[in-house]
Amino acid sequence: MDDKVKFEIEFPIQASPQLLYQYISTPSGLSEWFSDNVNSRGELFTFIWDDSEEQAKLLSKKSGERVKYRWLEDEDDTISYFEIKIQVDEITKDVSLIVTDFAEDDEIDESKMLWENQISSLKQVLGSV
Image 1 (cartoon, rainbow, N blue to C red):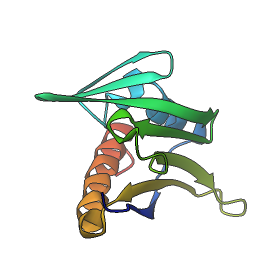
Image 2: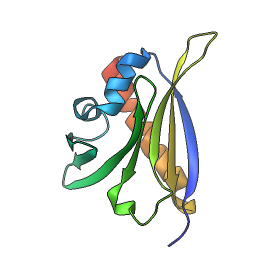
Image 3: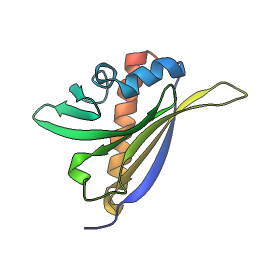
Image 4: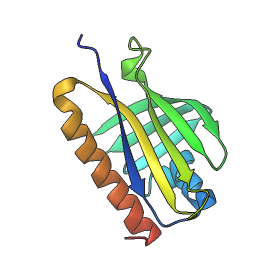
């Protein structure tokens, strides 16, 4: 198995950190933009798309600030996770989402595009396009 490479993308977004946190940490929030449907039992989240579903474990969260998940299919791969962090500029109060994820070397561009599409959906839901 190839080692995955960590990457980070920043998305400026016009929304309050409290509101954003609901969209990145709750099944109802995530199902608005991340996948078609999301169910959770405790720390186990099931993300459902048209004809596939993936399970992720919630590794950590900090209210109003960040959430970190690991796909269960990557269980052998203890390094990989994806994290969505809310960052507020102290001076300008501009809000950004910082996404940290891992991908194979040759899949990084594809993964980044996927995140750009997802965050674009989130911005539409928030009306901050």
